[in-house]
Length: 340
Ligand SMILES: Nc1nc2c(ncn2[C@@H]2O[C@H](COP(=O)(O)OP(=O)(O)OP(=O)(O)O)[C@@H](O)[C@H]2O)c(=O)[nH]1
Image (cartoon, rainbow, N blue to C red):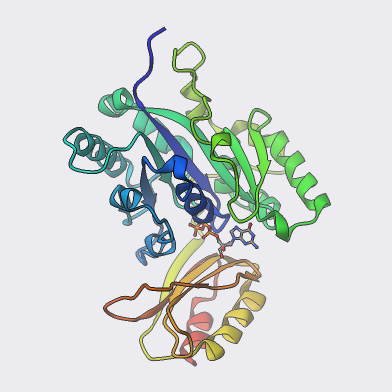
């Protein structure tokens, strides 16, 4: 048997706000992960994820982190991803960047992993230098069932996973978790399932999981590409096209100074009032009554506790909030935020 020296790739995906960045931060702060390169793909132009992913302490990882910000990998950026992976590899060979021996790609919450992997596997340089280790998918324990039933993207992600991570287990009851597990089992019986809170998991469960047999006898690259036909096992669900049309995203920029005391109730109202159609909200807030900027997050009706971005600042301290949703009333939301 010949040893496979190609660099293992973990594709980390999961629906909007399901806990990918939280998991990635936890993983990358694990000492065993220090030789990791990271590619983060962001949806929309607001470019917040790299700020939200900034708690990674390793300079080596920071130097090996690349952001792809101009669109979603599965539809527009497949070449950019392949170019980036090639570029990382050549820089590694030339010792122009710190050595890395694994790559984690975090996709946007709307990504369909199938086309991404198809594009990579069809690239001769990529497939000779990288090997797929696992598709790891986070599923929100609180909203996962709803997302799977309403959004083709969430279903496809669950269907192609090698590892399913039921995230935010602190926000769901045991019965809800069991129902979600059973639904996922129906959609993707072959995937292993773990329940996680705040991204805590032993990296060995998902990294170098040996899901691809290096000898090549067991490896089934086509499984990365398979159509999510098994997701039809969930009753009443129809296959849908990538990125359902009616999902829109917009950014509200608030240049004038504000306070968290003023803003928080409006965000709470927004989640209560528009939670059904609000798939994701995230933002960077510069508030006069806080010691540092904060990152805010919401999924549907849940506004999470904000994270203080201690020690971080920007040249232009502009508060901006990105909203992604289905049928969001942009005018009303803008209006409410701009009243502050
Ligand atoms: N209560 C609770 N909150 C969590 C947990 N995991 C993540 N969160 C919060 O959920 C929010 C969204 O988490 P992220 O890690 O940013 O989600 P994401 O999948 O990277 O989001 P997108 O990249 O926008 O799709 C953040 O406020 C997290 O702090 C958890 O286990 N419990």
